[in-house]
Length: 411
Ligand SMILES: [Zn+2]
Image 1 (cartoon, rainbow, N blue to C red):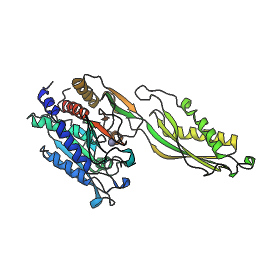
Image 2 (cartoon, protein in one colour):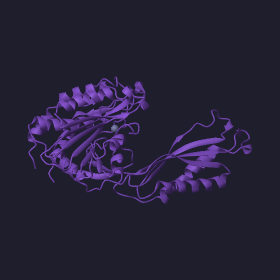
Image 3 (cartoon, rainbow, N blue to C red):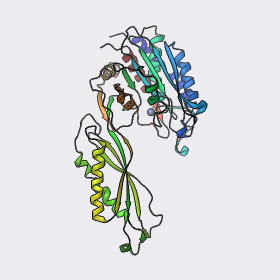
């Protein structure tokens, strides 16, 4: 195992640097057009300058055409540093874009001006995803500034548009830069994790959002017999859908939670007043389905249940899939990227990390669909997308040491 004592000491000294970088990155507001912004240009330019100071062998800016954005494009970066050994590259992918701050009255400070509260920095983007970028970048900087040679090639990828679908980010890169990534590479996406950094996410459930439209007959509430109450029908339908749990009961311990989940969520407004029997009710079901079941099976089962409730109540019930995302094939739990991360985590924190599956929705799915085994990992609190988003500075320091260990990892 290579000696990283000097590298770790260097990383321990980065506290002030982390605060400064977080401040500069947060001030460069990177909102995509779907979130009311003009793109990630200013922040990406700043990151490009940072990467340039580390003398990359390759530094490419890839512009995904988007006429709604500043200059008509969305900026993505690929930086690459060669190592002593050829072969498998360690890639770390982070994203430059952020989500809007939301209700400003819920923030204690200006979301775009970083404040320091003890060990925490607070501001929009400090955790999601500046934490991921900073820990991977500082790990590389510490190794190179120590005068060490990288064992293996290292690549840092900074993408746009992660928060609004990735059409102008990773999805575009995988088409435009075909052959850049290889199935032997170790691909890490530090964009989700748990608080002690022991969750290495390798699998996701399929995602399905179902919309149920229950149609009856509106009438005055004092003469309910003249109408057909769609709210009562929606209630019966929601209860009937409880049977999905039994129908799709298989449990897989790789996942948290281990079972498929079917949660009624949004309910659209029906009538604005109390004294009318509602003629139409619309509600939604969020389904997270274990990869062993197909999304279509769940849709058919829901349609059968709707038909039987419809027969019983005399109401019309329409079922529509408004969003579906089939789970990508999981990254094998014994893939080298999982082993490298688990070894590095053990070395730095002494903790035993484990491969796990989650409910879905990370950008790693794009890699997996392209046949590239990616792992999602970071040490993080659950503060992403929240008001007063924060990132503990010690987490960045720990994760930077873990990345440094992965960059220098020996099988
Ligand atoms: Zn993110």
